[in-house]
Length: 259
Image (cartoon, rainbow, N blue to C red; front, side):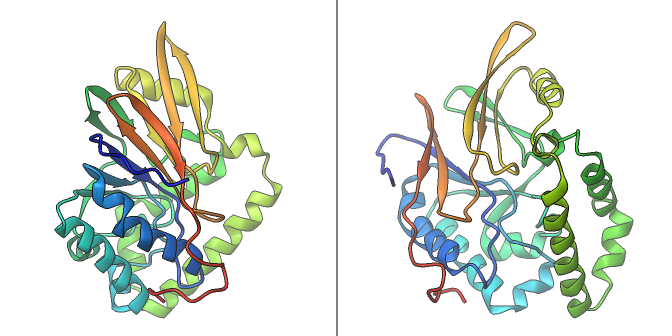
């Protein structure tokens, strides 16, 4: 259910995994940015906005350019928009930020939400038991690897990104589900390192509110939903946070205004 509020509030989304092949998610985002998001104090996108991102040259493609323009319209209306890299769009850079009006955030980042210190993360670094993924993450976040990748022709980068995505999906089928979720000790350490702030993250696609007890401190962790079946966002105000579900704009086979 979509909720509109006149109370000052901030919105969080992640794991949209947009591509020209996801018209339902794309149209839902379009409606969200034109309606619900316009009433917010700010919008945070905590990674995996796109299914994959092969460098800011992707802005030459009509779909990516159109997505950037929709975010730019929201930012130009006076709503600050912030972006944190995910594991699919970690190569998104300054050109896209400029085109979209987004401000890039480090992972992790602590913000003050109406008096409550809140730690923001994409969430993949919390899954430390997935050793294979963490090795892959370290490799692709290496500046030398990124420089070499971005030097390749655009069509080769697209091919490589699709291959990695396919291998990732295959790997998920054989991994223990607990390995792909957050590691409790790593979550505790994140709370500890950031003075027991409230934590908001995505990545695991397991939307929920969790309560933690760390060194005698009561801590709250919110997990954002993915947009595969329907849109979702987290709304936070001075009274706390609530997960909200968006109505799907169109059927998964319908055309998108951003295709």
